[in-house]
Amino acid sequence: MHHQVFGMQCRPAVTTGVVVKIMNGETGASNFFVRHANHPVFRNIITQYLYFTLMNIKKLLFFVILIGLISSFKPPTITWVAIGDSITYLNEHIDETGNRITKGYLTRVTEKLPHIQYTNQGHNGWTSGNIATEIEKLRITKADVYSVFLGTNDWWQGRSVGTLEDYQNNAGNATLYGSFRIIINKLRSLNADAKIILITPMQRGDFVYIDDMTNNAYGSYKAKAGQRLEQFADAIIAIGKYEKLTVIDLYHNSGITLKNIVNYKRLKDPETGDYNNYPYPKYAGIPFSPVTDEYPYPVGAINMTYDGLHPSDKGCTVIADMLVKEMKKYR
Image (cartoon, rainbow, N blue to C red; front, side, top):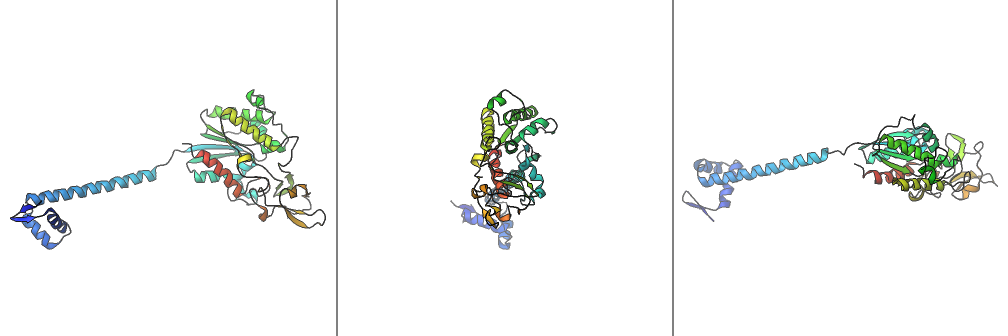
């Protein structure tokens, strides 16, 4: 189709080209425009040109605003109270690990989920019985999420694991089952809608405290007071199933096992007195003297734990990743 412009046949593309030149400030095109600016064809073309330019600007502004909204969106803050023993406590006391870890599992979770804010209610050496006894004095606050990571000290201190009936009947603080009922009752009284996560104890090797070697304990490869650590893990799993609570099963599902808790334990050969690096299970039958022997876990021995019990950076990462997999669902 052609337009008749001042006695000339002008194709739309040619006419549009003139307008583009005008917009670009080319002199010859501008002179042509000045002479014929009032012609309806030019007015129509200029109107369309300006219309499409304005639409493109609107589209650009829309995308700029959309990108700004997306980048500024923050999920709502979620509050988390983490109840536990020394494994939780050490998150805020890295110096007490001999600086063998850089950050604990709580910090690692909140680094990956920054909308979650935690309160550390870890108590060094405590059992679930200690937590239950002191539950009203701990000033545990209302929160969106509670985690309960206990049980390894219950086992080592010889507390009775009890039975599920102790939990169901609210039988008191004499067993792990009964202690957990007291704890969970308290958390529900603070926030009936809160998410409650139960975390089982992880398997453990021979523990030797880095700052005091007289503080030591054998691993979960044998019973203490006639009970296996796995029984305490199974009890926590049973409570979670009964209450329909999320359970993070470190004992069975974390990949932390007796074989990788440490790379080795450095001990004296009973026959020669020479130091050797003994992996599990060889180290289990070799005596250790906290008075005369060197610390049995040099840096090279560190694997999932740095001292046979407390998780290393590697171990804390495993725990945090299992928690993140669950907690990223929370909004």
